[in-house]
Length: 330
Ligand code: CP
Image 1 (cartoon, protein in one colour):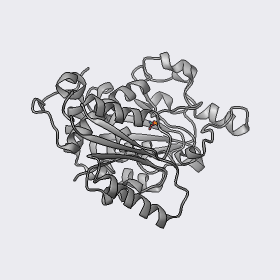
Image 2: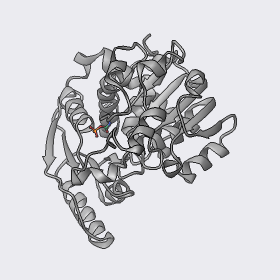
Image 3: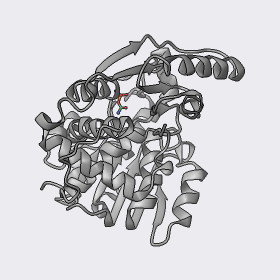
Image 4: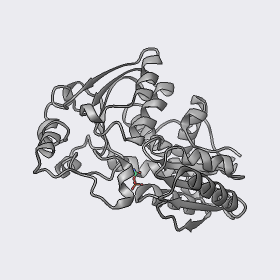
């Protein structure tokens, strides 16, 4: 069957079709409510998740399907054991369930799972590598806020760009869907965007980027600001706090150069869109939530729609009424 491990495996047309279907799901809840009736989705989360897990479960329930939750736990093993474990586990579950969602701390885990599975596998985050369904929610949000186009925009990304799977997924997908985009990559030297993502930007006609070490000098130029957490997602299974304390020297530096506050936003464009996959630490001041430019709760709302569209698509349960000419609301 087909999977979603990386959006690189989907054509631009398939991605845009899915986003249109997500809009249909949003506006046709009743028509969608039995599309996955009788189907069961297995969820395996080896890393903490609030939004992604509940969003997948809720999407399946809204489609009339069922959810079987595998009690995931952190695997602290070497590669060989990991591969056998995931392979056998997924091969087995694919005899039981109709679709499998997996989040795992190791890069490439979702690919291993997809290769082992006889049913569709969805990557809900593989270590610091990719998080494609977050990207679908991000794209739906950007299309809604930017007039249905991903064109002629200056997009800032800020945080631990080295470890941010959401940033990697978003940028590499925009390389295929966007036109004439300029990226402003805001990070410390240690947390730079990885070379494999920069290489994609280099290769994309009409795209450009710059790397800077503070939001302050660039905030006024941005049409979109995508914030991410400062800490690598890999540390989460230990339960370690994700955020530096504000009292350390490093914390003060993060606070000055990498934190969104109402004061910083005074210099920003009135139609700036501020995104964040959440959970957040200190990088966005709670006072920003009341600013109309804050879009991070919209991302969560649209995340259910894109997951409904994805599940229905991978199960082959597309609505007959779906009119492809549906355009984006607002
Ligand atoms: N955005 C996101 O992946 O959130 P969770 O870690 O809560 O799933």
